[in-house]
Length: 209
Image (cartoon, rainbow, N blue to C red; front, side):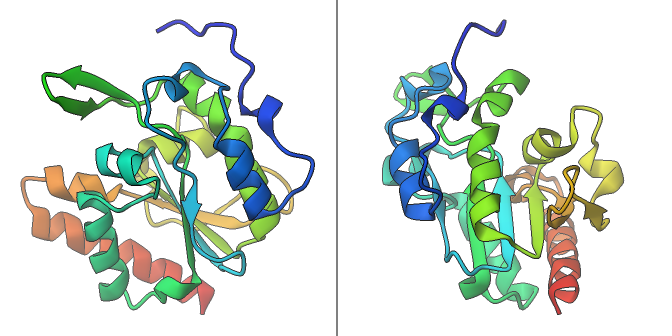
């Protein structure tokens, strides 16, 4: 889809920078066309004191209905992986690079569709604002869309996963990339894919320690 003339999320950022203010403002965001077919904005979960931020791609069908990130099948994989890696879930803030569910209708089902680069870019001001409020020690980018939103289209999770990286903007948090939990569900060898996700999350735990 070619990029139309949309205002991007920057037009909807509130003057007050708190998670509560951002969440309320994001609920009204129409910075790209994904807001219209979606049920609602899906913003984030987790405390403002979190040292670790997990950034996924976008909400899925169940997230869109419930208004919370990572509450569907991929979320259950993520919870298992965090527990296996011994990461304290009370110290984790979870969000997505894109805040609305992009999908293709197929009968009574809504099939996930990957956000276009410009759609992710239009939503990027929300993630920037979240990180400005949170000041986390580490950001884990879950999957290609999240990683490319931060590091550009040349970034390859398959080549650079598990590597500790500097944030592209000065004074930003450190980051590492890994697969999205949904990739575990799609993998031919789910045990191996899950083990790889856990290994990357253990690196995150070690960094925080």
